Length: 179
Image (cartoon, rainbow, N blue to C red; front, side, top):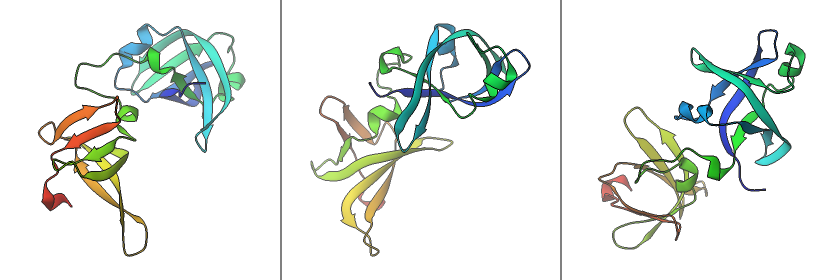
């Protein structure tokens, strides 16, 4: 099966009709307007377990949560059994992004290259901050403790020169003072 994209996490049952409270894991809540079904799964050690596709009967926003009703889930006990499951979609079901914008999973794993065509390392994580994202680049250099050295790089348009998804590379204007 293809890699699934997490778009929400079921955190609790809601009410007596089998609804569930979902924490959205997406910036694009409007995606739910067109979704008719999702995969429910638990992720443990990056393995997909208990994969099932469920039809969405209804959803609504409630504070910072989504309240969702799935076909065939009609009581609080069954809804409770879904706690801890993630709502997932296939990559082709993702919300289309504007040009020059990427999903995190498209960036993580890219080889980071500086202006001198030197390989800095591989992007292993992305932190969200208030003003901009920060890429974590795992290098081939080792720290004194023997662990791979990590560089933190601000994901600013002025510093990211090119993203080449086809060749899995990202070209960065990496200021020497960040090393």
